[in-house]
Length: 133
Image 1 (cartoon, rainbow, N blue to C red):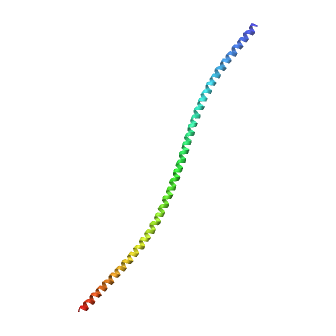
Image 2 (image 1 turned 135 degrees about the vertical axis):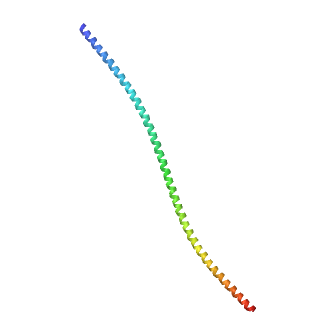
């Protein structure tokens, strides 16, 4: 019985040692789990921040796209205005050319009338001189 009691005491001591070792191992695992939990939480916060950054960039890209679209529309409007002004300028140049030709024609007519008046004046002078003589 003493030998059996001694063996049982040895078994109890072995079980206690194993229990202590398991307790120590469990504590290490709890500590590691806690550290992993903190690491996971940190990664979650980083992922949330990246998500917010991505959303900000997406909104910024949307705003830039809208702005680019508005600028393209403005460019198209300006091009249309430039085309219309160019067409109007061409019409005005054509009208000015026609007016220039008309002015030149009137100038030639005025010169011709001036020569006719001068001929009539000379003719009248000659007739007056002849009548006077």
